[in-house]
Image (cartoon, rainbow, N blue to C red; front, side):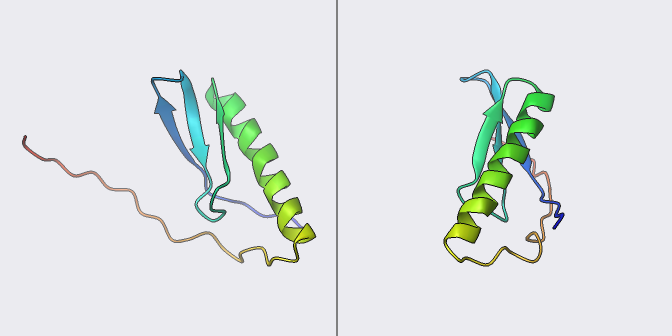
Length: 76
């Protein structure tokens, strides 16, 4: 079965890599020093996560959570 998952990538200055999380799969996280590496590792992490879910008899989510991205300006 083919599925697409949304991933969040955030540059982590302290580590010098992109932190990747998968909102539909809580705890599914990885990282990569380049965007390409981060996306490859995300694919690996998701595959491993889904295999673990199958072993445990858990149901794979039907769809990603609805996500919006916004920006808020504040004065400090």
